[in-house]
Length: 437
Image (tube, rainbow, N blue to C red; front, side, top):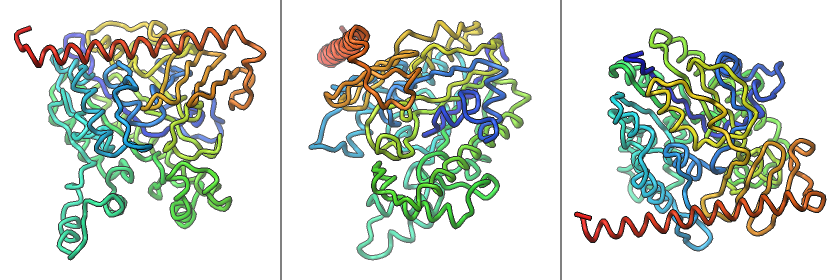
């Protein structure tokens, strides 16, 4: 700690469901998240944390700026969203709003990051505010293998299938595991003066759920790769395309990857013990494992398996279990409060109802502690999470007043976001036309 300002380590974990974390309610016998549970017991355990969106590109820009993305900011291309179009949309959002890294850098923190996720890469402008930014998602990371293949006639290394294949062979991007870059992460830390802000993004729990032998307690290597080979439907988000024989191996592989990220937390916590940092750990979104006809997160639904995430703050001088809903958009204000040397009040970060949306805004939800209202492309439903945590029964006919109130709240949030976006676009145009304004 320097001048009352603590070192801060932020760990973002891709695709980790809250219900696989012991402190939220997973079976203690599973032992999946022993280190995370210890951090939760010693610090602040948010048990109803909600991601701003069901995918990284709809969640992390909002989590890193504290400002939800307006659906109107996403340009449609037919029925699909192109890779480059998404990156441009994310970059525009991060250029418009100061990120957590920029805010801490302005407060005198040295800042460093390591991310293998393309949606949080330099191409998406996530490096703003970082003194050092190690992007492990770039094709250039393939090094000699990529250069060799590029010399083969009529082979384009920039095509998406080949790029994914190279990523798998070289532990990059969606196929990254933390052991492959851990030494680089420690090197990043070694180059930082205190107080520092260190951010790392983990991909281990992202489909196709490949993990090293040390963390495989339920699957053999053959079962793991069998699940990978039969997971094309899962990669595309379609549960009906996953053969029954692959469901068990995929679920077991997923649990093994949860063990892997928990092992990362244990090791980094030990290696940085002398720095005495504040730990902020969260997932960017959840993961479907066959619920509601979906697998993975390549769909845009806003059910609990997609949005309910772990969120823990440890070593910040506060110990509390918080059951009120909290959005991950609270992360920047929370961390900046700590960076100012102030004690944060966990419940001040919560809200009776929090909002989440797919990138296009076709799937939206307002989520409270008991009730959750979902508008899925015009098909609305009210769920009573206390009695129906799997969101199977629409109880709007039984609670019409609650449904109407949450619908008004949902529409009010959308109107505010759309109006805010229009004002900011107009201001940007005015500034471009008259730089002295």
